[in-house]
Length: 436
Ligand code: GLY
Ligand code: MN
Ligand code: MN
Image 1 (cartoon, rainbow, N blue to C red):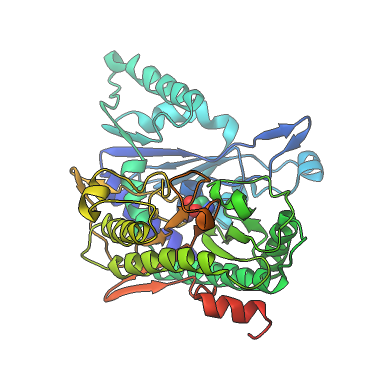
Image 2: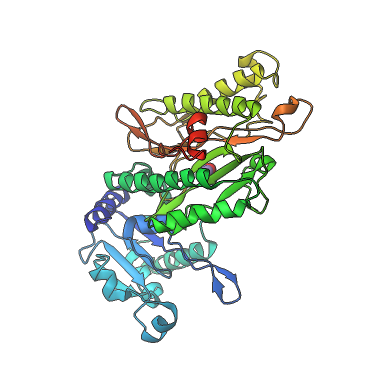
């Protein structure tokens, strides 16, 4: 992202904050995995979105109209000894030179300077409730201002979650964000295609997992947007299966839900394909039903439609199909009203996607489903997870299928960012036979 883009984002935020407001945003913290070992650090998406600053132990302050500068960054100072052990730091100099803060201070100055920055501001925006320790710290600063009212101090009276304004901003993707998401989806789509070519009976699920990640990393996406799911056979029925330690059996399907993160932006793709390269007739029947539901849902993902329209389109196709297969009995309308599909399809048809795989943004506004607009990106991911119960005809039991794409709402419809991952069953069989 260019400095100009970060500046545009901060300008939009400053405008939403209003001249009487002040916003405070902490960076993510390092998280311990086990003794002396941390999880790989991932900056908070909100912090990255506004600052691009990649380090933990930092706090950004946005102060509209402040003449010494509207963007203040508190961060770790340079420290040659610590940097020798833990890696380079930008320091306060880098915060200004590289990240374009108007002013930067060492983090140790935060408690001393915040009351002064808060004094005189009417409205305080911060991530209320996200971290109880940070809540307490902010209220400590506010209370210091309150303690000085007789000396003329003016504490804020309105407290607003910064997410309320920031997440509306993040929901609508800019041209450069879309470019990055398109590339992330393309890398993941190509990795899915590679897995189809390399899948064989007898291979372990985790082998596909690491091959997926290997392909993405070689394309510049070192991290995944979420833990990779590779579920062979009945494991495909577990929505967030992560063990990935079973052997893939001849005659089973395998469900792969995997997507890389590229430059802070997620992709999220699911493909389900036959381990031996050929769908059996009942597998193909179920697969084509899920695919028809997914296509119907994608058609509904267009500007002016409601957020819920793709989901409702998928439910209609899936319910009709389950009646046809003899799994459900009754009238489609009533079955949908009764949620009779729930034992076989228990999740929603999608979610926003962006910097976070389950991205920010409200799904409802004033009690009504949100209207889709160009620049919003969502997943469309219907599935069927058939339990081994008497209600299910024997050939369909223990089959799990999900098909998931990342879909950008455009001016005149949508663009499927993950379209390069094969999903037509004939196309999948052709790829698996080494044909393309
Ligand atoms: N991979 C998580 C999801 O599909 O929502
Ligand atoms: Mn998803
Ligand atoms: Mn997924």
